[in-house]
Image 1 (cartoon, rainbow, N blue to C red):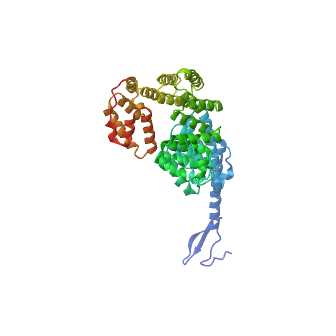
Image 2: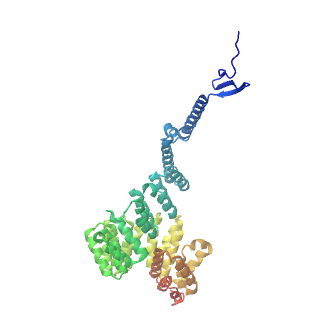
Image 3: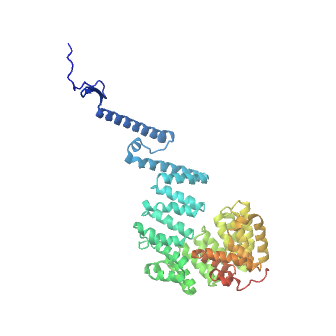
Length: 475
């Protein structure tokens, strides 16, 4: 016989997740849940789904993408996930390196950027990407890539060297000073007070380019070690030269060459200053010695060609022989040929610049720098009519490219007896270089080198642009 349960008694749950009970007066049926069991089930399901997703992600990276170094535990354990990012970054870096070596430069840069984004701490990938940008002549992107590593790798000498060298090679001397004096010290790296004098030398070079020789001399006087370092002699000699102390500069280089006879930079500067001081015989002898010490160095070969640049009498045969060997060896090397072309332009060797320009067209090199050198050599040789003719021919089809050399356009107009056309260009350059001292100094040197001192003065004093009118066009 079944006995009815008293009011308010709870019936046993019929399911694992809970059941029903009768409560209240009158009794009502209510649901009762076993929360612990439900929460436990939810946790098991969530864990199962998480591990399933982790396994799927591991399979995608390791099996489908075939990325080495991706481990299941690195994906499943959140604190180890940066290792996965590092492995993906290393994979992209390897792929970018192969693409670059195969000549697929665009895809190589895109892949290298992905490598840096995935693994910002991969300094090798960052340095590789910055070097790619440099070779593509994209200096801003290269510097941005390197600066992105300051937060994590400011103390790494490789990053420091790459940053400084990139700024120097691009002529960004203001950024060099900011980097050495502010950005790196803010991260606990003081290169200027370290044992490596090379950075103090870079600072001195930047000060010379931005503030002039007087400020550079003041900075150099504060460092006894720098003044006694033979490798600093070329830059210190340049400071002496700009301060009007030519013999002292040459004496400094002579002493440095005696101390370090096999240092290329010192040999190069010695030949250069012998040329500047008009010591032709000494320049020829030093250039010959420089070439004997470094027969494969482009700078040594260029100094030899320059030293025998009279191309008359006994100088003719050595000059022709070295030029022939240089052209044969570097026929398809744009950087070396462009250096020779710039030298020829500064010397007024119109025949050599014309040959180099024609070679650049035949060898599919970048033709316009060589065209500029050819026009510049005509200006140096005072063949203003021919220079204007060549410039006009280039302008007909290539006006956009010629816009990259406004200083040359100004010299052509001035040499053709049209200073009114040159004056606006000089004024524009003066405004553009008001906050860019290194570029202004370079432009001023260019104008003086090619025989236009009035234009050089116009960069600093606008009234000087029209103070003296160039003679009418002619040879």
